[in-house]
Structures are given as structure tokens and as C-alpha cells.
Length: 307
Length: 307
Image 1 (tube, one colour):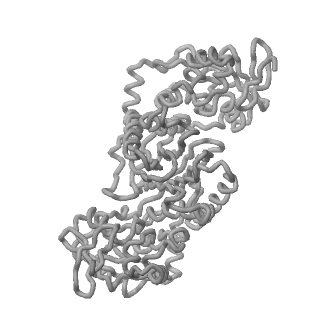
Image 2 (cartoon, rainbow over the protein chains, first blue to last red):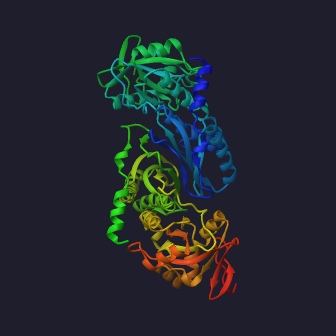
Image 3 (cartoon, rainbow over the protein chains, first blue to last red):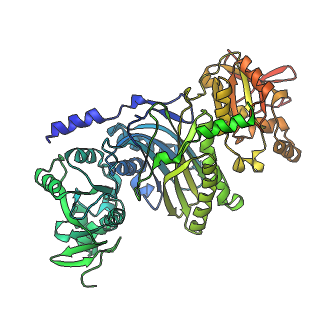
């Protein structure tokens, strides 16, 4: 599980864009997919004002995010992203420059993951910037990792640190594509999701799809430095930010206790911490254990102990 | 080439949505594609004010169009559409009702062609309605029909009748998916494109990609009844409408003269006329022959004889 082994392993698995044959000038791209793997398809649309503010973020970072959120969905299945198509609605004023910066941002992320941008549709309109990306990928040879595979007794683990993404991480994150592939190589991933809505919401998705429950341990939630900064500013707790802020784009997953122990001890993903944050239980629901006191954790919200 | 044979042949080729496995609650869909065919991918975004007017068209017809324009792109390659993902940006006011009507419209078209809607991303925002659809398909077993295969001497043919789509056809057309498959079964299609920008533009796309030219015969251009109605209203000629209006979503294709004669004589596509409209020539460019006078036909425009 050395860094060398990881990078070597990844290089072998980086899809060659040679497999993508784009007809010159055709509206539709044609590409080869291996017949022995499931094809993954995911799509996400980003809209001015609700997913970004162009004036603050700049089009380059919006392009990065538009590609990254889709790659994060592929990562959540431990799949290999292969190709993307992009549709854009550009504001009439400054559309050309915006399009170029968007494309550079998307290209930067796509190149890093060997993803070919194989087609798209560029429009201008009287409205504000909207961009929709669809990413195709190959499922993990062991099959896609779903939200539905958690079993009571499983360890619930998370990559990285959570909270405060609004300070920049929500635009500048790196999707955990490689980390997911490497994790799937190291252990048997039972269930996985990428944290887009926020831990307190996404853990409910895992619970519902897996028909089980989870008990989170407050002391084990890894807090992002941005969550600490935000907490100083707004008076909410660091923990609340970590649980509720959303757009962390880290991986939340479950494994057997044996595999969990192996991951926590070996920390096999170079440059990225893996934390156990809870345990799966048979009873439906999600609870937060703070210093021995167990209270229900509602989806999307954190109920203060003294509310 | 009886109707029975056509329908029977189509039934065998309608993809089964059983091949699409959608994980319960997963953000990413997983599906099987046969390894021996190229996978086709196309995307189109429709925006309020530039591709439709919601208040006039209604969301149901916008949904139909959003699906149909993508299926038309698959048809242009004589491919089989298999699955679609849909991203929507809904206006905050009335978004729920709009979403339901959009979905019913998309569903109606998708069902008719055995296309599974396998995923999507639904958002609301302060802007106006925007919808982006990506369709995946399988290439024709003989390989995708491209824009680049026309040869000098080829007959240039078109399905149906052209012009006046603004009177309703641009929302309510049926994509020529089945017709394209049947044509590819009957003859060797050298090059094909769907008429979205309009004959006078799209024929230039064929010419450029095929590195050849075309001479259109004005007397052979099939005029749609809507083009006749429009011509009465606005004083432009019926021919100008047929050449320039766009959004006909008919198929423009080239075949050998032998195959062309076969198609024109046999008219093998039930309920749909096939017309020869011109001929491919070695010299680059596009010309319109009106009563023996040959003039250049610029992309997107029709130059009046007496201008």
C-alpha cells in the first residue's frame, strides 16, 4: 500500500481516451465501452445563484466544480470516469470569455482524471449562466458500490475532514475518484456515498437505502479547518458545521469491522486521513452520540443539546 | 419492405430497458451496453426564450421537444437510443407543476422509442426554465452513419417536407429514429444529418465534413404545408421557408444513385415520403439550381434571384 504501488495501480487503470472516437463534426459522439462492465451515467446541473456566484467564483472555478461534482458521483460508486458531455447556457454579455474559462476549468479536472470531453451543446440566452455535465464511466470490476449495502455492525468511515466548504472547498475540491478506487482495492466496500448534502443528510440516505440505522460518535467526526474558522465567526459549533454544511465531497462508506480496523491502522490512502465516525445498527434511524448521550440526528439538521 | 416487415424488424431491435439497472437511490445509474457496438452519446439543452416559450408551448410540449431533439441526433447516425438522463432548472414559481408536465412529455416520447430515463438532477432557481437531456444509444451494427461519408455522384435525399416548423412542428415532431434504422437496412447510407439548423445550413455541414459539394434542385425541395401558410402571411417564398426555417428534424442523407433510385421508386418507409433534392459534386460548395440557373446557396440563407 505504498504511494508507488498506488500510483502504478492507477496508471494501469486510467482509461485511454483513444477509445473515444468522435466523428468529425458529428453532433453525436461514438465510443467503445468494454462489454464486461456496467456503464455508469451521472448528470449534475449548476445554476447561477444556487450553486455558485459567477462574479465571486469566476468561470474557471465554476467549470472545475461542474466537472468535479459529476466525478464525485462516479467516485461514490468506486467507478472509473471515462467521458463527459457538457451543455451550457451562456449569458449574452461576455458569453465568449465565460465559455473559454469554463472550458479551461473543466478541462483541468477532466485531464487530471483521463476523462475525454466528447461532446456538448453551447447556447446563449437572456438568462444567467447554467451548465450541465453528464459523465460516463465504467463500473468497478467487482460491481458498482451502492448506497444499499451497509450491514448492522459495519463501521461507518469517512475520508478527509468536514464542514466550512462555503469558504472555498465547495468550488476547489478534488473528487475522490482515485481514493475510491484504491479503497475498493484494499477492502470490501459495503456501501458508499459522496457527501454533497452534508453528513447529517447523506448518512440518512445510506440508512434508508441499506434499511439499517447508524450511530455517529460526535468525538470522532473529523473537523475541517474551515469549519473551525466559520464557527469562530458565526457562533455555531464546529460540530454543527461539520455535520450540516454540505458540499464536502468526501466519501462516506461502510466496511466490516475487520476491514475498518485495517484502514484506520494502515491509513493506506496517501495524503488523506480515514476516520471511523460511527457504526451501523439494525434499527432504522440515525443517532448522534455525544459524550455517552445518544440523540436522534435529523436529516439535514443538527439539534442542539440544549434547544 | 412491407409495413409488416418494418414493424417486425423494429420490434426485434427495440432495446429492452431490463438491461438498465438503476441502483435504488443512487445518484449514478449503471447499465449494460453490449461490448461489440459503439456507444453513442449526445446532449442538447433547451432554454426559455431561445428554444421555446413556456407560456405558449406548455411544459408538456417542452418535455417532448427536449427528448425528441436528442433522439433526432441519434437517428442522424442510424443508431438505437437506449437511455436518457435529464437535468432541469425550474423557476421557483410553479416549479412542481412544470416538472410534472415536463416529465410526462419526455416520458411519452421516451416510451415510444423504448428509451429508459435512468437519472437526472432537478433544481430550482431564480432564473427561467432550462432543461438539458443526454441520450445514450447503440451504434448501428454497420457502424454509425456520419456526416463525412458523402461521395461525388451521390444522390442527396431528404425525408418528409420542409419549412414552417415555427407553426408547431418544431415542438411536436417525431424523431426519425425508426425511419433511419429502416433506411440503413434498405440501402447503404453514405452520410446523414438531421435538419435542425435548416436545409441551407445543414447541407453545408455535410459538404464540409465530406469534403465535397452539393447542387440542390429547387424544383425537388419538398415544401411543408406550414411553409405554404407562412409564405402567404409574410411574403417570403415557400422555397425560402423550406430552405431556411430550420427545426424540421427530417433526415438529409446521401446514397449511391442505384440506392437512391431504389428508394425513390419503392418509397419503403411507410407513411413518409423520400425525395431526391440534389446531387453531390467533387467541387467544394453548395449551389441551388432554379430552372437551369445555378447560384451559390450560402449557409443559413437564401439569396433571392433578384436581390
